[in-house]
Image (cartoon, rainbow, N blue to C red; front, side, top):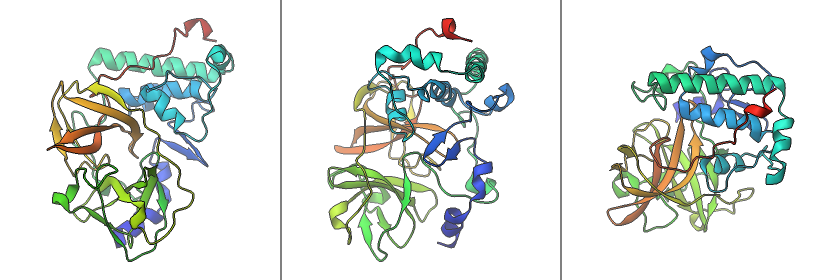
Length: 308
């Protein structure tokens, strides 16, 4: 608990993260106010760069195709407000020269990454950093979640999906103590989606029945998911820990059918797709590395004529 307290209290991590958090905004980089260099872009993975250049136009209200990963991601951001589809040209016209320059820089790096076989995501060809590699230690971070205060002394069963019949981690005994830190994302059918630190290290994302809490939750909104049927394109591990990847729910093979729910970004800037599937006859939700699914792309139209 002492280590977790340090994680929660530290504020210095902001200088270590490439994600910029300003009030209720979460940007990858301040591409609207500063020149982005190719050198810093090469520190990212291709999946994150695709979100990064779409973010430039999202700030101006670009409307993404419903159901896609960019639509789902930007609609979960409090700063985003789309404009009518017929007004997308307005979004392009309002994009500044600095933003267009950054857009072209990002696209250039993406093409070079694709040509060189650069890993699709961070850690694809290397061992992920441990939390001790970050000095000083900082707060756990996963998009969509916020630290909440619950009455202490409660020990609640945690399930991977919003149902007591769904797959449950920890050999069927996963639970969370409210005496420790708990982060929450929202409610679904009376279930609260949370993540918390587990004793063997790492985190677990799951659901607790809100009716079992000894308090009434306030200020917690509903969850928004896409529910897109799709296939796994590359063998991968399904995990309920998209930060440390300590816990494996199951192994997925190319061709396996899953339901895409949303995309999350962890504090290292890695993108993870949140999916629902079945494990041993039970509904299970977890994360796979973005790029492992045959999701429809929210590709922007040809923007070259709008470039300034």
